[in-house]
Length: 122
Image: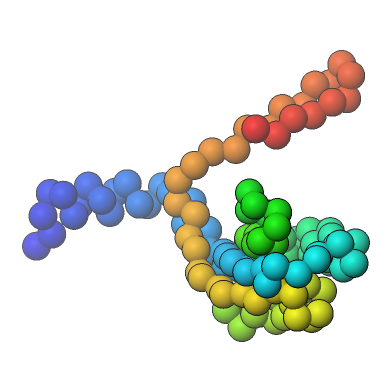
């Protein structure tokens, strides 16, 4: 018989998002990204347009060239295929690791102002 705490946890989990994603952690090799940055950015935009890209971007220290990309993929193999096609990886200036990630809690705010057709994501 489940404890009161286990029952409470089950009840709380039922309403949570439970969105399965994959996080690609990219490790730079200290090499110059600029020659391939346009290709990389285009690849990310293409993934975004296909609905595969959830979020992507560099970490704080630009000289290290580390970053993180979160993708929608059916499994880790598809996430690996996505990572392997990144121009930074193809050119050998980044390596990567992949971790499955489940989004449970959090929030996203999206505002559309009809009067001037502006929008904001927070």
